[in-house]
Image 1 (tube, rainbow, N blue to C red):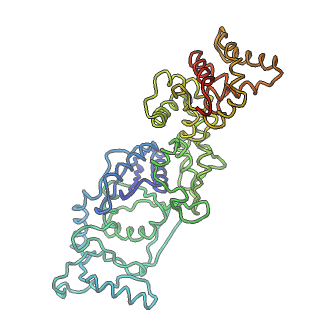
Image 2: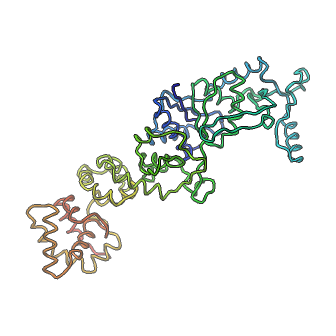
Length: 471
């Protein structure tokens, strides 16, 4: 059997973490089996569905590297066909028209609540003659569901789950205005798209029982279902924005790499022994539904950040520079020049070891792209004022006289000067760092000097000598 999975988000908001993980699991399962992964936009809620949300879903999936096969399917565009299926069931006696008014249904529910009973439609019009219909009531079409026995779902994650059919009422297929319900549309679309495996959150399990009944009524092949536990916050409570339940684009803007996010989402509820660092290639080779746990996974932003740091250190330098340039341009309010980009390429390996996100990396790299005179932070300015500037005044002509400009020669010069003065190398390096980076934190300062080059280094030293904290 050729495997066909799908991700079917509703475009009423961003691509949240839970949805991104569901998409990843479906994508991995399809790729693992050489199958197809489809995208369906369930936009039947016309009031809440927006094009902006659709765009964010597309962008989020593409950023995560979860490319879908074929063109996206838009559910609302298929509404006419969904309605046709409901009428076919009606004609075959497997569905019926219900003429209960909204007020009547409300009264029934209130009475059931008062008696402590489950709120279910009692099948008033199931076998009633439509000629008894009251005037002025537009009927809905309901599925004539089985009333005895059980509906049993052999779930690929949860194991066999079952429900007594008497607990499920006759669900609405078509509303009074003729529009199809979500339950009908999903089943028809999954059938028409040839979906073989439905992998989704376990909050859909109740829907699955009803959809099973609809598949049987239509005489269609029923796909395999796998319901994955939801994601909770670190405190065990339902995941919310305070835990980090943001859109995929928010994590991109926070400086996370897509490969780190894929690895992290993969490990939210799925495991492969003790492996924590799992490449996408390994994930495709290893992924199966048997290894998904049945307990809710816990989202931990700190753990994601640490994992991202690993992928940042492993990332290709040229790719990191490409990702950093727009971040630096945003901070600087201007384009990053070609010469500044060359500095970044030369210095990125010394920076990425110190960062866990692209935003942190951009902050660390900013001094390479700043124009003279270089802004100096408070700690660096204090260091320069407290004797650092005087030391640089003496060191400047010596640095200027270095014949071959490289980190080795620059460090040897500074070391010899420090020894001659009875000082440690750090006492020389710190004022240099303050003058050349504008901070008291940077990569090894002699590496920085080589990357900046002679002209830029000497220019920044002159600027530091001319500046004063109170200027």
